[in-house]
Image 1 (cartoon, rainbow, N blue to C red):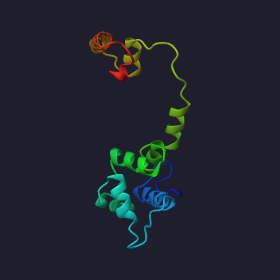
Image 2: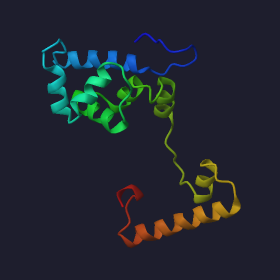
Image 3: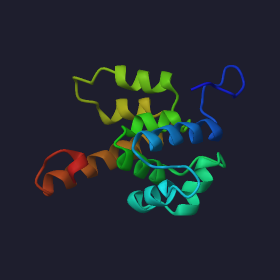
Image 4: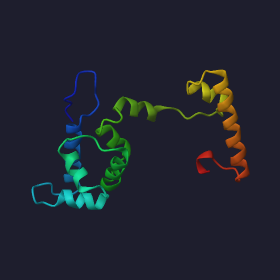
Length: 149
C-alpha cells in the first residue's frame, strides 16, 4: 500500500484504509461495482451499518474498533492486520508486540506499579492493596487465572 501521509508517519490514512478494504472485499467476492450489491451484502453479513460501510469505502474516516473487529471477523482477516491497515497500529509496534518474550517469573504488584509508571508512594500502596484484594477475591471464587474471573 503506497503511503500518502507525511514522511516519518507510516500510519495509514482513511483513504489508504478505504483502498485496502476495497481490495479485501473484492477478494472475498463482494461486487463493489455500482449496483453490484457488494456493499449492502457486506453490511448485512458484518452487522455494520450500510452508511458506515459507505463512508469507510469513500475514505471518510476510520471506523471505531468494534467495527474494525467486525470487518476482521467477516473477512476472516487477523484483527492485527486490520488494525495496521486502519492506522491504529503501525507495523513496527505490531512487530515489537509479537517479538516480546513472555515473562517467566511472577510479576510482583510493586514491579507492576513501576512498569505502569506509578511512582507516588501512596498510589503504589493503593495499587498493591487493590492487587491483594483482587487476589483474595480470585482465591475465594475458586482460583484460576485473573482473566477468567
